[in-house]
Image 1 (cartoon, rainbow, N blue to C red):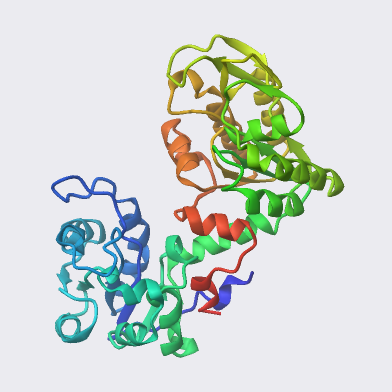
Image 2 (image 1 turned 90 degrees about the vertical axis):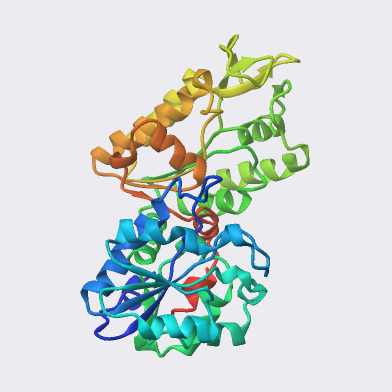
Amino acid sequence: MNTQKYMKSFDFTGKKVLIRVDFNVPQNENLTVTDNTRIAAAAPTIKKVIESGGIPVLMSHLGRPDGKRVPKLSLNALVGEVEKVVGASVHFAEDCIGEAAAKVVAQAKPGEVVLLENLRYYKEETNGDTGFAKSLAALGDVYLNDAFGTAHRAHASTAIIAQYFSQENKGFGNLMNAEVESISKALGSDRGSTVAIIGGAKVSSKIGVINNMIDNVGTVIIGGGMGFTFVKALGGAIGTSLVENDKLDLAKELIAKAEAKKCNLLIPVDTLITKEFADTPPERVCPIGAIPEGYMGLDNGPQSISKAVEALASSKTIIWNGPMGVFEFENYAGGTKAVAQAVAEATANGAFSLIGGGDSVAAVNKFGYTDKVSYISTGGGAMLEFLEGKTLPGVAALG
């Protein structure tokens, strides 16, 4: 995908720049922001508009108010955090459309920022309503989408709004551009030297990704709970390990497809077993298809780890989504930590590594490899759909 047509050189001087950001951030009971990662991710675009003489008008959703005004989901609570991160004065509009919003936008001066109220106070936002999108569009001269995390949804502020701006007055923000560029780069790399690590609990949530990866990469490393569905499909005994019995035929189909496409599908061969789902030391390492009744596997064993590390060592591109085991438990974090280290080492040797999905990102952060990978995606669902080969409405709208 050519992202250049999305990332343009705009003249922001004296213009109101409507920016769709993703400020759906975690807060504590006092509504204080507990993790400002998403605000910080949007800051470069906001600062760029300010430095270029424009006035950023920010719109976002927060939580799921489902078309109602839920006071604890007001974006007003984010004003102080946005001011701190962006380094500019932020004026809050108590609505996101209409007179109240227009008045605050009209009064804002260059060097200042406007933050609109929660988009999802209106059900028209998630319904992709054209009238609502038009009302939002009336607040800006230029539209930038910088919310990759919502790009897979055809909502009013992410997909529908773009039709009310001319081609030269709409495009990607810095974050959105980096996301699309990084994922496109990973998917467009040389097939043979590209490795995808797909982990997590369920095959069902990653079917599309595994399918598309088999088509596009040379090696797919399967990890986490989903591995047991593949093992059982091959006739292995998995004890009380996590399994999706209704997905056994699908697992067989994916194994057959990988063989036909000459994709090296690495299914775990050994595991650490225990009787209870708890952070207690494992009883022993066990072949993954010979787990005794009453036992479950909670992490990759040493052989599975070394096979994964070996595949990553010769890679030139890495796509990682999902952990290898229950890494939240110290006793079962070894498989995920070893993969994180191998990804970091491959990156140091020149590979391009793309990490996405909440658990993978949490693992990279936990083990201290955040600065040792090429790119960390902010959009879980959007990244998954992109990796499945789907067209994202928020991206297509700016085409």
